[in-house]
Image 1: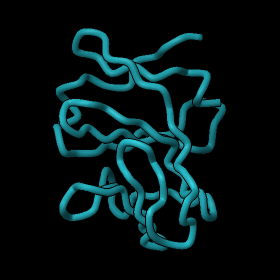
Image 2: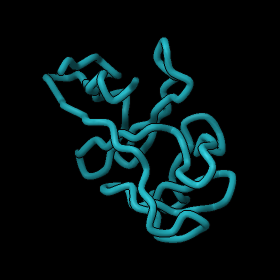
Image 3: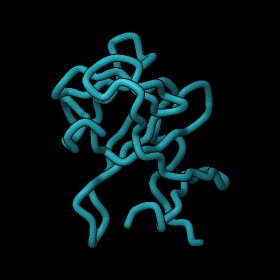
Image 4: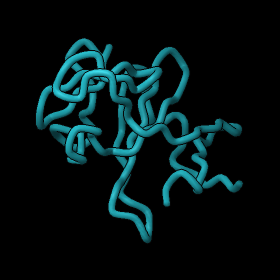
Amino acid sequence: MTWQPLCRLDALEDGGSQGFPAPPGSFIGLFAVRQAGTVYAYLNSCPHIGVPLDWLPNRFLSTDGRRIICAMHGAEFTIAEGKCIAGPCLGDHLQPVPVRIEGDMVLVQDDALR
């Protein structure tokens, strides 16, 4: 298992989200959310029909910052678990990407990106 840098930790503000393009060899990008100092990362693909979730670049969260929202269908997901709590994919989950913080860098497990 290997890890690759995603971004600097200070580039992902607490209460914010950021999208990242698909790595070479993949069609699906990912996004990260930082909440209460913890970073969560998921593939940028709604479990309902596979569309990207962001409604504008780096905009994945509800206006109050408490849920991840799918721009296409309005499905709502918990940040910590990626579980759909409202919408057409109720009960489904976003695909998590393992995250690790080393110093001031956010790293992701590259096996999850293939």
